[in-house]
Length: 433
Ligand code: LLP
Image (tube, rainbow, N blue to C red; front, side, top):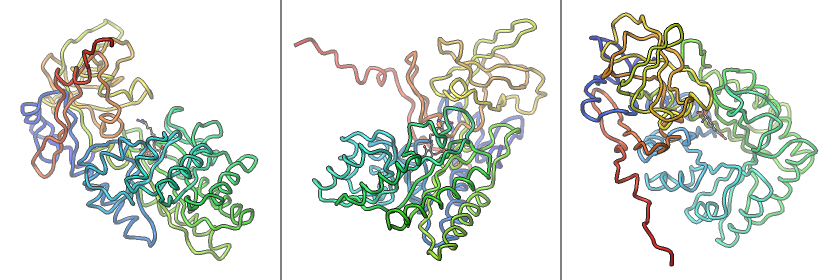
C-alpha cells in the first residue's frame, strides 16, 4: 500500500481517517477512495507529462471510475478524459467538463450516442470501424460540425494481465487491422469525408501491462504506420494516442513501471521516428485509467459467516461480493487485504474471502493471511479503485455500496448507498394495453 494507507494503533488509516470511523459513519460494504492518492496520480500526469512537453495531453480513462467528482478533479488538473459511452459523456458534462477535452472511444458507438456527443460539442472521436465513419460523417454534416479523428489501428502486440484485457493482438474486436492496408482504406474514407478531419492514429495494447518494451514496440510500429500513411496517402499524422494500460501493484508480486519512464520512452520512440523524416513531433496523448484510481480504492466489508473445511480451506464471507468486485472471478485477479480492527495482530490464518452471492465463483480475495477472523470484524481489500465501482451490479438485488472520498483527515460521501427503494426504482407496474 502507498503512504495514504497506514497501519497504526491496531487499525487502518486512510488519508489519516480511521477506517473504523468510516465504518461507523457510512456502514459496509464501503468503497473508500483516497482523494489524496488520486490527486497525487493526477499530479503525476500533469507534472511529468502535460507540463513537461509541448503539445501533449494526458487523458483519464474514465471507464475505470466514473462519477461527477472524478471529472471535476480531472478538470482541476487540466487533463482530458476518455469516454466510451454517451452515459459517461453525460456525467462528465454534468460535472462541467469541457466537451472539447473529451475523446470518444468505443467499438460500436451507437447512432444515438454519436448524435448525443456531437450535439453536445464533443468533437474528438477515436474512430474504430467503417460503419462509424459513415455514421459520424452523416450526423456531423447534418449538425454542421467538424469531428477530429484519430483512427484506432491494431498494433498486433500481445500485452496485458489477462486474455480479457488484451486488446493489441491480431484477433481483437477493436480498431482497424493494419493487414492488407485496411487502416489506410479507412483513412482514405475519412479524407474523402467533408465533416471529419483526419488527425492521427490511436493505439491501446491492453491493460495491467508491466512490459515497457510492449509500449516501445507499439510506438515503433505506429511510427511505421505514420510513414506509410504519408507515403501512400500524402497526409501527416499530427496526433498519436499511445493508449493506457499501465499496470499497478495489486500484490507485492506486481512490479509496476514508472509513469515517467513509460512516457519518456513513448516520446523518445516517436521523436526518433519523426526526426528520421525531419518531421515535427505530433501531438501525443496517453490515457491511463487504473494508474490514476486503482491503488486509491479500499473496500471495507463486514465479516459474517466463517466456514472451516479441515485440511482444505477457511472461507470467510463478507457482506458484498462479485457485485461490488467482479475482478477476482472475471480475471482471476489477486488482491491483498487486512482485518482493520486487528491490523497489528499476527497474521496467522490463511483464508479465502468469499462474497454473499449465490455463485461458487463469488470470491473476493483468493488467498490472504489475516489475524484470526471473527464475525463482526472489518476486512479491508486493497487496490479496489479501478473497475470495481464502475463494474458493480445489483445481482441478487444487493444495493450498490456507497463511495466515500478521504482527504487530509476528512471524509465525504460522494455516492450514496443504494436503498431498497432504488432496487424497484425502474419497475413500472404497467398493465398490458
Ligand atoms: N484506453 C483504451 C482504449 C482502453 O480500452 C482502456 C481500457 C484504457 C485506455 C484504460 O486502461 P487502463 O489504464 O485502465 O488499464 N475491467 C478490466 C480492464 C478493462 C480495460 C478496458 N479498457 C479490469 O478490471 O482489469
